[in-house]
Amino acid sequence: MGFEKVKQILTKLTQEHVEYLKKVEEFERKLETEFSPELVDQILQFIDNDIAEHARVEEEDLDEALKEAGITDFDIEALNFGHQTLDEIVEHLKFLVDKYRAGEATYLGKDLKKEIIKTAKEFFTTLKDHFTEEEDFFFPDILKYDIERFE
Image 1: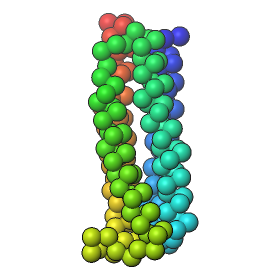
Image 2: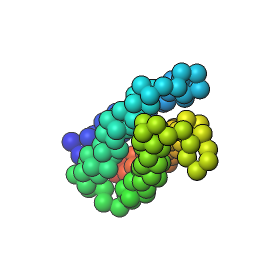
Image 3: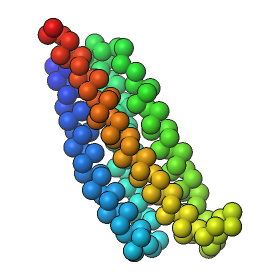
Image 4: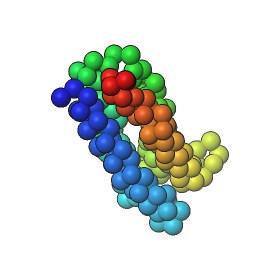
């Protein structure tokens, strides 16, 4: 099986990118027109469930499949670095949301609702960039290992 499992994981991840980017577009639109505590909950749930599981598959399942396929020199940490950046933004977003839920209206003299929207959009932009980086650089770099076997 070896490399076939790697290809299956990459295909699934790429399909999820498309699905998640559609959700992100919807969230971005709603943040501007329909901001509500329920929307914020939906966004956090999306991040905590879908995005967290997606990252886990990349960090654990893909890494394991690469090792099983005998690919030991791919730098999985470079891929994981993007996840750490996203995690830092999420941590700040949750901090702001907690203040909002506690009834606060401002943070560092700025409108808290606007800061939540800005931080959520920053997360979405960083996520889009991360997906692009994976699809344009990391995934093709992984796939080249299969091509090299037949050269």
